[in-house]
Image (spheres, rainbow, N blue to C red):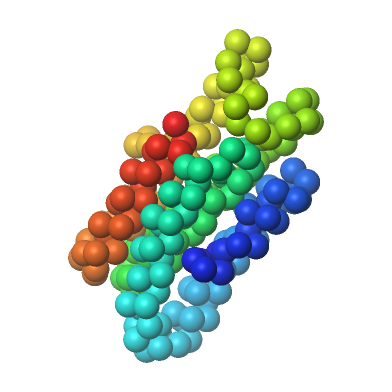
Length: 203
């Protein structure tokens, strides 16, 4: 699970990996950390998970905001999606360690949605890279006039990445925030701030 400060490997792995590797890493491998938390940390060591949940809330809350602020500074398209994945996985961890059913359901829905949306975005970025041989954001200004169908698909997946209502990420993020509001007010505040910043880097 790429939680701050153990997240440095993820953007570098995505940047160096081919398109298929990035899709598999975002769609499947990142979810193994969440599965491990559900199956082992919380499933077997429930009391230890409850004891350390304030620490996990602190790390994850900071991670959501830090990842969003870092994403705003990136110019490589793959790094933008990679750092947004760090923020989404921090939200998943907040949902899991709230230790209630609403948070569990929200975290699982968010993991499934992130696997589809993030994998789709990496696939589209790979298509761009194969055609233009660069991932620098500023070179793609006005691409809607050249590739309109591609741009529509990219916009739909980007809206899913920021968690717009009626997209697949919205139920998961909403449930995580709802359960977190009952469990930990400060974590809710940081998570909501990270989601607002997510709208900024997605746009």
